[in-house]
Image 1 (cartoon, rainbow, N blue to C red):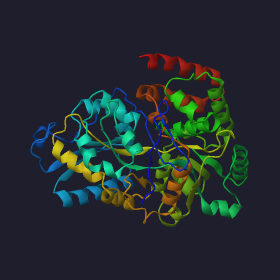
Image 2 (image 1 turned 45 degrees about the vertical axis):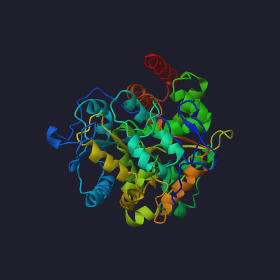
Image 3 (image 1 turned 120 degrees about the vertical axis):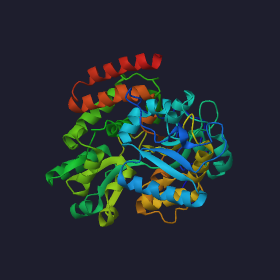
Image 4 (image 1 turned 90 degrees about the vertical axis):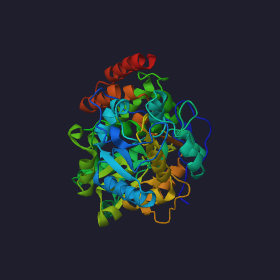
Length: 445
């Protein structure tokens, strides 16, 4: 069986704390909800029976997708092809650029949204469920719930105790590198921050930019903040900070930015004009030595280059917390508030929860871990097996900054704040004061 999320204690503040051999509990997260024109749904009023209350199922289900990169786009298409062959229902896909999808999701869900759409577990799901912008799918869970752990069910459950989300896969954030580059130079994975800095200096001496870095789209830098905060201040402080319960002017937060500022010279220059894919390509071209990102980075590697890819957990900074925490987000699917074909959407969600669907997807995008406890790991590659081991060895699992806090705070405050920091890492007092002032206003609302 694939390594799975096991039952965890009750949520701690806005996240979950897990025992050593547990996997993810995943509770929180939030999406940006910028006030921009809604995504264009591909459904139409003549889509037939079904509707929000059920009715006669027709033969087309519309699907709003953020799987815009070629590898996941092809992988999900292969899953839908099998679903159509099995159930005779066509899936009409509305694919939108990943970042645009997230930025426009609020208006999209308030308009003529597709029957089923891609989204994220925890707080991101809860936020829209609580606003009545998604349909309860507890009926789906009545059929598929046995394939998921209690922790994954919790990550799919709204504040009202009902289910709104079907988990599909999850993946860890770690530091990726080329094995051949490390071997050729006699380098080993650093265990401490001091060793990371020493390694970075050695890479510079060899003409490499040590750490690939990109933040054109606003979210990748959040992963760096997350891991530094958890390494320096621990998981509990991190989730409390995300929940608005700690001050951004606290000396602990300033220490995170000071540590990051000290590491910035090791990061690839010009990050605000670079996408994550371009940064990954620089790692592939052996122009950079390391890259902190989610395991989906593997989508940018093929053949021998993929086989040359490896990773390590971000090294220890504070011995009190060691390397006990990581980000490991859960991706999956939800149903819109007024689906034109609810019966067909239910069939699709039930299929997406199946081991067959998840195994089919991972056969085409082997960079994630199946969410179903019944999905086989027999065909997992070395990176997938190591990903499962890394998550299994972690005591605490976070979802990701913009999944672990309010959507408005993540999109309107943290994206520009982190980009301002990258441009000017010297004014940490001014930066943290600005974040705190905005946080007070937003969380008071």
